[in-house]
Image 1 (cartoon, helix red, strand yellow):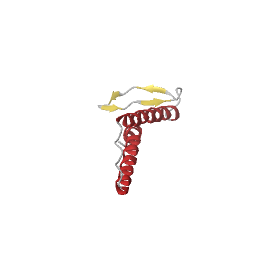
Image 2 (tube, rainbow, N blue to C red):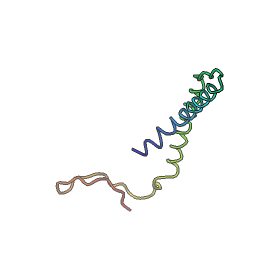
Image 3 (cartoon, rainbow, N blue to C red):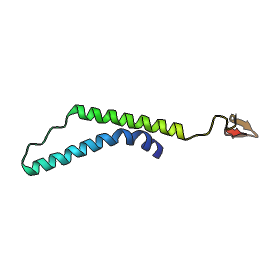
Length: 93
């Protein structure tokens, strides 16, 4: 569950949450000064979502390139049924 959260949800939501919190604090400060707060622009939210997708894709590419085993790590042994039990798949050398 944490892998899904860190690789998909967090990169998508982080830029949007940062932008919306920035606009909230900026509006709060302008109301305290007596100014009219600036509206949240929909194109800025779209841009933050695009940045989130870019972060998510770059994170997935990084994980794919730096983790896992090399292609010649061993021979794949498919799952099988032995002595009434299911043996899970393994890699043998």
